[in-house]
Length: 162
Image (cartoon, rainbow, N blue to C red; front, side, top):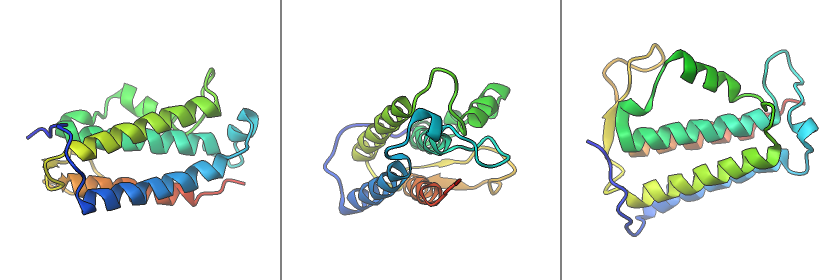
């Protein structure tokens, strides 16, 4: 079953989820407020992780789960290209700026709000793809996917790589 995007009035649950997600997005944006591109891409650990990469990763993750809500398992790919894109999501690539990453994040946030507003119900669900990190045969509702986005956003907003 594929979800539709016919705009509807938000239920209180939809509004609560979006409001909570937006609150944690604000915390994440605060993490990089006032940084230069050089500061935002600085790696302060042995990993590829940088503050701009945190924002970029959260945006990519939110976009992926929003697509899952709409398209189901087909939205998730574990190809070499998608795995490279996932790895690239933790750092600023050549030609990227903190401003461009933040603008992309805002576009993802707007798309998520549009999708949530168009859902006939937060009970719309899809099976999870086969992967070692998902329970075999599990299904996630739109609600569960959005709660995952809220949790991951909150978790990464609490990271401090300095």
